Image (cartoon, rainbow, N blue to C red; front, side, top):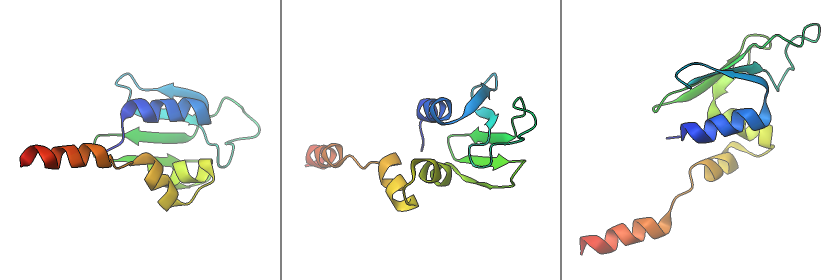
Length: 103
């Protein structure tokens, strides 16, 4: 599961003109993939929805859509497997500690 605070920070660091819904789970911004409309800089057609179960995006200008892992990989210039490793770091020490406590 992705932390909402991490998604929020990612959006503000990598997107232009970000707005957030009142509950903080829907992001609206200019699309970094297509740049949205070149005629009007105020248009924002990129939408990203976060929930504890999933995080998906859609651009209503270029039609691209997918999950957070895909947009993260594309904007960071890494493969999806590398993005997965960065986003979902496995804490081996915590795991080993939890196993030791069971004995």
